[in-house]
Length: 190
Image 1 (cartoon, rainbow, N blue to C red):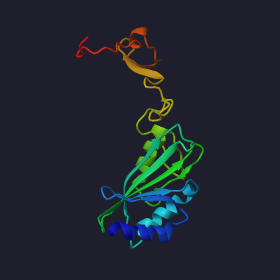
Image 2 (image 1 turned 90 degrees about the vertical axis):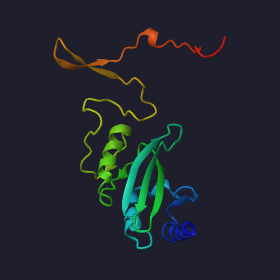
Image 3 (image 1 turned 60 degrees about the vertical axis):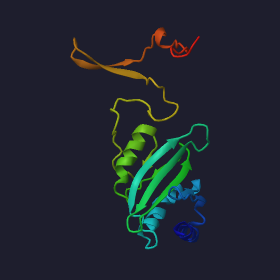
Image 4 (image 1 turned 135 degrees about the vertical axis):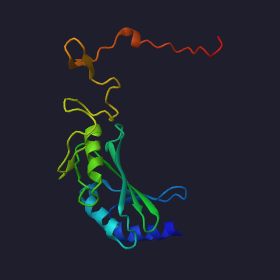
């Protein structure tokens, strides 16, 4: 009952912006936005937040998923909560690496931390964000660790040298013994 009510609201408000709406009784509704409206995302979220019909006033999570096989490589995922109506909404929008996402901190203040994390881990840039400092990696770190094309071992290893009493950054060197895998299991009968 409530899902059909929300579906009618979204069709009235956002028909040109919506690519699909998925309703699932087990989870919250999923709103998939078109790629073209990424620059209008803050204004759409402001409507959703301030609308008396929805009151999605809390940004629970803001994250990105990486799928390098797609032309639009990244998917922006937002999870919103209406405390007043006890209702959750998921919003997805796919975009490429060349696209910039406008900051959502003008609508949801807590998005600033997530935007810094996304910038640090995926290399996705948010325009008009005043604080995109590194959050989880150090300033000398190269690459973006949560991208699927990032090597599992990284590019550099960090260690502390007792003799020099300093932190050293050295290129990763794998010996041959780490590259050979024994695929037989000791629990299987031969």
